[in-house]
Image 1 (cartoon, rainbow, N blue to C red):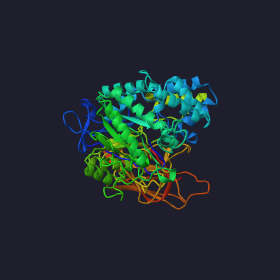
Image 2: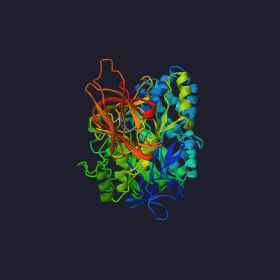
Image 3: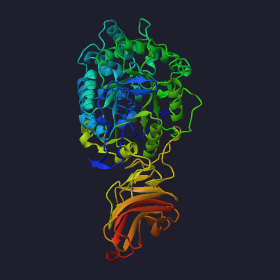
Image 4: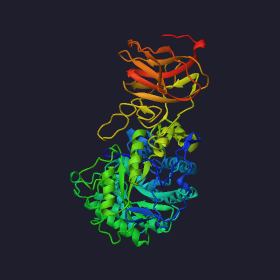
Length: 626
């Protein structure tokens, strides 16, 4: 999951994925020729720095997170003011009975991810799914009722902890065979097995919460996993976390569909400022308990560790420092958001491994597998560069995230639904999150599955005809387009790569527009030196009148069009008027030959917005000004 600290993203499917460069269109999305899903599922284990199957063949896990499903994160649902799942529930409990709230959540979990979503991931060529889940899905209805009561006021937290202590002592936690958490995991395992996908079980919201970010770990009190003591003085949330993994291991220890156990997602802010050690002592001690507890069940699954600082810092967690009885089948995680992807970028701390150079060096130094459990929340350009860098090091990754409400950065875009706190909003949400009602972001799929040089039409474009400016080609910066700012590589810099935030996820700035006679979207902030490529089919040779619908900047602008290497004409905009009036500018192009061509729009001088380009036979329209 993503946070508000140092993070970054990563990818590009390489040899193990055998992603084909051919563009196959099905349901409007890119499909590889030979998806990795064709491989047979085999139990995985660590062999030095590699993850291998039962035959010793290396398996590089590349896939998607299904976040926002078994733990709601506010930004995924665009309920940011509510901050976390428990605060969403708190708001719902103020307007409805608890039974009604629980029924809504059952329906939400039944709709957000289904077999159709998993089938879709497999068709894109991915070979694994990371499954983030909340520990409260393993509580009974009565136990969850006690937690719900604690949501209403902080005074109830102590009572909830007392109940947990009693249930723990009486072995009443996680013992029922048909708990919702187990049923949901089993469903995902079955759906993934049908597609030959591996599953990574990820305890995303640990008992008590593993950090201070409520959006991530849904904690009622920050850092309670580390600090809370029960009436007997026990670190009860840690005891419960160990108990949960004992039960999970007992159930899935012989299940080869499970690739890894991700023991605790993104511990963070475990530091002296928060009354803890400065060198991960608490985290190291809990990992030792968890590893030993899983192994005591006879479970040899790969155990994925996550460092402090959102999964990346491993002081006192390296294999030589980790105090566990059995150090086999351990792997180390990194979560990469908003950081450089260049091979020379490095952190002076060798135990901080979110940068690719550090990640590879850590793997080679300790001879352990490394894996990027989360990466994303950036531009397509960043995605492509991250994948390219990781694939070059043969490091696997799992993209965050499959779905987001009204987001161009997820694989599937969920339509806006209103407010989750209203009956109408909840009804719309349950409908909109269903796979059939989501919109695939084709440019995101291309960024994750195609080579750096890949380019393809985003939409069929023909001359004569109208070309929406926002329908430029699919591909990386410098291949399909050029923009001044195409990716966020510093977590402290909040500049958007798409200043309009609409339609697509490239560095190209796109805004929604309602200008009369125009398109839904327009390209904006066109600066000198930027350009856009359009693959066009000229169906009739001849001379054309070209019209461009522009909103000028405060100074005269200039746009030039090229067909291949041949300049076919330019337009100069008038200076912007106080009313920001749109202009239709025209020129008569040089004769155009029949065939498939690349049309390039070059920005010579800045223009505020461009809505469309229109080509009409010169005989059917005269040149016009505004």
